[in-house]
Amino acid sequence: MKVIVAEKCGFCHGVKNAIRMAEEILAQEDDVYSLGPIIHNKDVVEQLAQTGLKTVSKVEDIQSGTVLIRSHGAAPQQLAKLKEKGINIVDATCVLVKRLQRIAEQFERDGYNVVVIGDENHPEVQAVVGCAREAVVIADESDLHKLPANGRLGIVCQTTESPDHFGRMLGAIGRGSFRELKVVNTLCEEAIKRQQSAVRLCKQVDIMFVLGGLESANTRRLAELCKNENSETHHLQNWHELDKSILLGKKKAGVTAGASTPEWIIAEFVENLEAFEAKEE
Image (cartoon, rainbow, N blue to C red; front, side, top):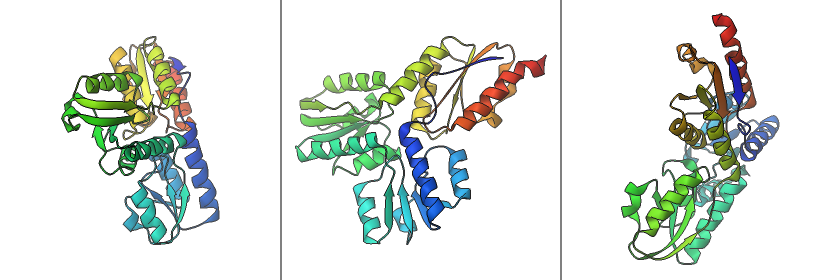
């Protein structure tokens, strides 16, 4: 089978940095924790767990040692509790997420109602919400009723959202009741490049594969965008999840991957996919 890999895919700088920091700490210390999965990829999390990284869901689960703040960041309240316990903090928060948090804090200081366009259950968004006393999270138009009437709205966006969704939501907010709108573009340029690359590719192939964790917001977004253009789009975590029957009759496949998908998963998938036609023959 002919396989084309998207020009932009796989690990982003923020994820590479978080993993590098984790590996460096694990080589030096024994008692190392991650506050939530370091990235949304179970294969990577399992690999790091084998070298000693303990993943916990809340601050109360950590009593000593070193804690790694993952690329999605943490709320100021969580960091304060860790400091009170005297726990060593190593911050691997993505620089773009840090910027998003600072903007939310500034909006609140300036008297704006902080509005975050994104998924309220995503750790990045939860960390941003923790930076403002009364932040409102809106995922789509059905959440617009949450906005304060006639308010001064300071609007930011989850870094991995698509520009189209961000634009649609700004238009919907603008048609509502407000006194003032202030918007800062907090989208990740690397995520946008990956989205554009994936959409271009999915239009050229018979079947499209998006590789990455099912919990990964940026990977899900890639899959949604590709599915809109090619109904034969499949979101898988790795080669072992593939139902080979969906390949029958397909001659050209496209492959992309989320920002938290390691190169070895992409390489393994592509190698097996390229060999598939030969096996069938």
